[in-house]
Each structure stands twice: as C-alpha cells, then as structure tokens.
Length: 318
Image (cartoon, rainbow, N blue to C red; front, side, top):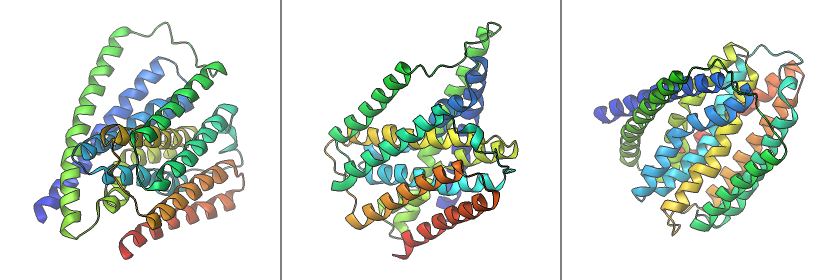
C-alpha cells in the first residue's frame, strides 16, 4: 500500500507541475497576443487547467473505465466551484466593486452558456450514461455557441506589433513539454488512485467524483489562489467558468466518442445527488459573483465550501 500512496502523491505533483507550466506559458502567449484577461483565463487557462481531466477521460475510457471519466468531469465541476472558487474567495480583499466590475455583457453570456450546457447535461445523463449521440449534442452546442459569439462581435484586442515570433516557438515548446508531463502524471495518478480505491472497495464512479476530481482540480486551485493574492477576481471567475464549460463539452464529450455504446452507467440516486450539487453550486457561484455585500459574500462562500465537505463525506458514508 505504501508504494501506491507514494505513486499517488508523485502523480498529483506531476499533474500540478505540468498544469502550472502549461498555465504559465499559455498565459504568456495570450499576453503577447494582447488578449483580454477574462477571455484569456476562460479560454486559454480554462482549457489548459482542464487538460488533466481530458487525459483522464481519454485513458479511462480506452481502458473501459468510463465511469471514472464521467465521475471526474462531474466531480471536477463541483470541486472547481465549491473548492477552488470558495477557497480563493477567502484570499480576496472584498469590496463593493470586487465582483461587480467583472460582470460585463461578455461574462453574462458565458455564464448563460454554462447554465445551458448544465441543463443539457442533466437531460443527457437522465438515462444514466453518455452515448455517441450525447457527445455530438455537447460538441455541437459548443460550436453553435462559438458561432454565436463571433456573430455578436465579441472581439479581442489586436496583437501587439512588437510581438517577437521566436517567443511563440519557445512558449509552444514549453506547452508541449508541459502536456507530456501532464500525460505521464495522469497515468501515474490514475493507476495508483484506482488501485488504492479498489483495495478499499470504492466504485469507479465515486473514484472519479472524489479522488480524481480533487486531484485534477489542483492546477485550478493553485492558479486561483495565486490570482486571489493579487486580487485578480476576473482571472478566477474566467478560469472556473472556462474549466467547467470544457469539462462538460470536451471531457464528457470525449467519453461518448470513445465509449460510443454507452457502457458507462450512473445510478439514479447518484444522478439526482450529483446534478443537484452541480446546479446548486453553479447558482451559488453566480449569486456570490453578483453580490456586493461583504458579509453576505463571506457567509455564502462558507456555505459553498461546507457543502463540498459534506458532499465528499456522503460519497463514502453512504
């Protein structure tokens, strides 16, 4: 058991290292291209920090452990809000304008899309599995959303003319290196986590909701806390929104394409519990982000974090 725990920790450290390097150099590229901070955090950092979930989704689905991938996507979305966002808010110097300044029209559109794909997710998983058709629906919704954004002229700033092309090559090579580290770390983490869980008789789906979900949320947590120290709320909200959107449309979308017959299965009781958590935490995220009262924000945030602790406890208590 000791070697497994050692590999489990090594896997988490490698995932964290790979994701941090990926975030760092993705951020550099976005800055050089003069892309807005919110859009950068939502698209580039959101996608980058979702890469561990993507790798776990691919590997576990290929190994006929799609329930881990499904549980990981759902659990990561819950952890991103109730753990990552909640903990980072504790480090923020909250003022009356802390959140109000970021709730622009652009942000509202992305929040609306997250709520939409969450509702689509509930409908898709109502039969307890993710099929090929479900994945096509998820991917199509994202393509339609991107077309909508383009048609509504959500523009970014023009790249700085002083941008040096050699930086692109350097940053791109570091991104490739970070992805390789992530891939190896994910392999080590997934193998050790599943072996530990099987030793204690924990089902695949619960492994995904807890161990892998928290483990793959470490990059988001590290990035969010660092941003909170700088009081960069725009970056935190963008990262959480982007990561949660990609977890649904990409991480779950890949499950249906690989495990196209839908052999993954979620119990109806588990489905109701987890969908309630995803929907309620998403709504709490919106309420906290739009609330301007310091004390109410702190109270709601404590409720959000407490909900996550109770939820994780119930996964193993039931």
